[in-house]
Length: 189
Image 1 (cartoon, rainbow, N blue to C red):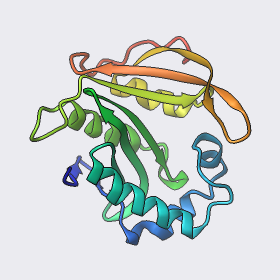
Image 2 (cartoon, one colour):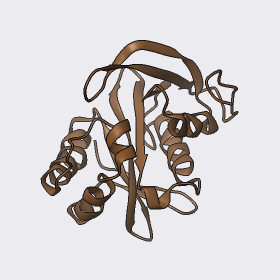
Image 3 (tube, rainbow, N blue to C red):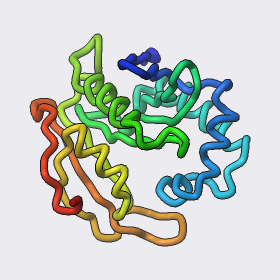
């Protein structure tokens, strides 16, 4: 699959590039990212280089994943992607550097990615379902998913492999016909 750029009001989503390595390395020093995302700890420059190679080239080329660098004025502030693409479904994942949180950027990026996922080819992937997963307790990620229109579907008890042990896994889904309502989630206030 060819790499695709997505634009929103404030953001450019593009494939990660070698110019992002320093910013990725710095962002992944954040203890919250290290706790919520299965990345190497400590996170080294070589890990960021590997991330860029795998997600910028291999994923797109295979058609199994699409990963975007979230940028503002060409400054890397986070990453978002669709993984496990197949059978008209995929799983969304995302993270944002601590300095860029609290401004709605991740919701804006996630909305663009969901729209791309549901758009019919050649302008999108033609998906029917997109899933969201997070370690139970990741309220910030859950709020983003809810704002984009995902419906909470439950908790998979010990359904995720964490850094040191299995963890409960929150799951939500959005279907192509669901629209952008923000449904109530039992786990969120």
